[in-house]
Length: 232
Image 1 (cartoon, helix red, strand yellow):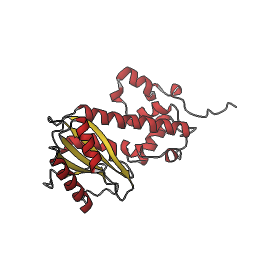
Image 2 (cartoon, one colour):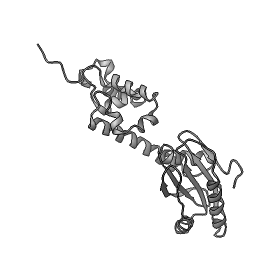
Image 3 (cartoon, helix red, strand yellow):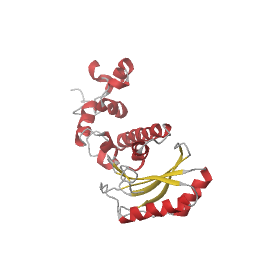
Image 4 (cartoon, rainbow, N blue to C red):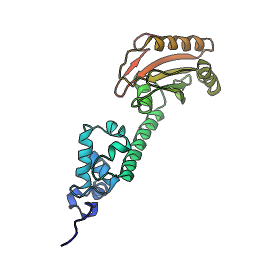
């Protein structure tokens, strides 16, 4: 009696179910999310191919790659066929995708609206379980000179050093600032502290001809703009 293989290796799949060859012959854009992740993990388990396993993993997060990226190594390892090495590989691949999205947004450079600022900042702080405060430093053409994390705190809030914000602005030659922080709770309503801090930074910046152009509150899928809501 032949021993049952420990997993379904990609090389043993039917031709129609070989994502590596499909990518090579037809291009990466035609592959499904499950097929792409199957290439990353290489094999499934005794009962299912890598594609089938990846479809099941994706189904658990409603086929949302952002949600998949939020799963911990231990959560990924609860799926049969996903050991620590495969879980780490999946997490690394999704983190690269997140960083690429952030860099692509930054290459656009010029901030033309609150949406363009959101596209840069959401990949950085939109999915975090804790609150962080970031600044985009802009030149007089509203192009991003640099971005910087000012504070990292618990879910209840962050502490921002106004002097450090303006010191960095002077060092990099910024004439405009876009403030941003995330609300892990998902609420987009600015708190009294959010409004007070915005006005404090705006007043301090005005004395140095450095304008606070906006303050964004960011969640996973949406944002609140102080500028759009005439709160500056």
